[in-house]
Length: 135
Image (cartoon, rainbow, N blue to C red; front, side, top):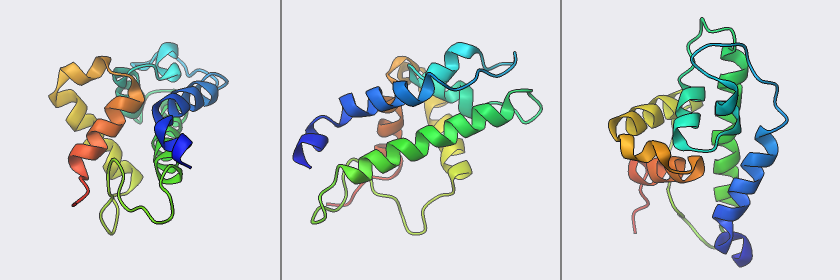
């Protein structure tokens, strides 16, 4: 388990690329095909910010939610049973997926410097800032 934690960023990027590549690309809208590769934080924001009236809404929002869930599950898997916390600690009750997405988008858009970060790094920085673990 310690090896997983040490290699968490590498594993997460590899898994994100693996799962992102085979997905069908949506029709034209504000989200483009490159966003589905989820390379940087701006790609993730674009996917998560796709509007309901856009033709690719369903695929974009499912990809967004899937990325959030995958990163969270990887974060949880990297913790040993005796560990608590980690990079972030969700409150009880945790936010819904939609609430978390809205909070993430607002955080990223408030600081344009994070848009160029790898998507997993942007997501983890947001989670750590919005859901810090008490020590």
